[in-house]
Length: 111
Image (cartoon, rainbow, N blue to C red; front, top):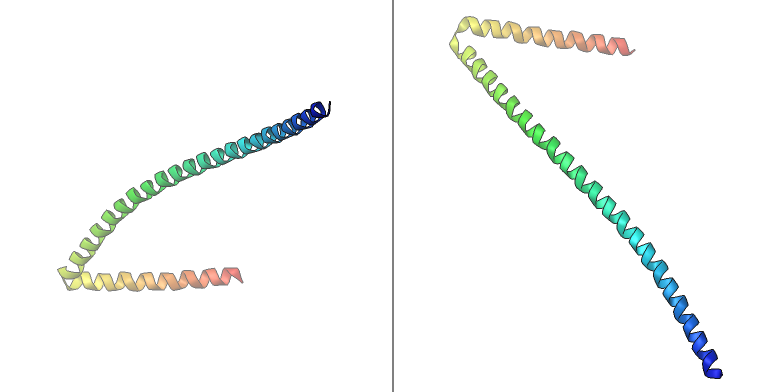
């Protein structure tokens, strides 16, 4: 009879450990599911950012082509003769004056 009681308590301890193991396995499964969800979200964000960067690369290439063409035209204009240089000086001076006028107006509007 003493052995039967000891077997019963061993069985109860085993049942308790089994229940605890099942609970811990469920918690682990929940954490794994959450980590998988986070990993998928990170992967999606990385793909979105890569698409965005690819689009920026294309935009920068087109702007580079546009700017290189403008620089070539500007260089040709400055080398072409005295009249073009005078026009270039007037345009440059006009842009500087326009910048200072806009700067004055913006600072005046803020106060």
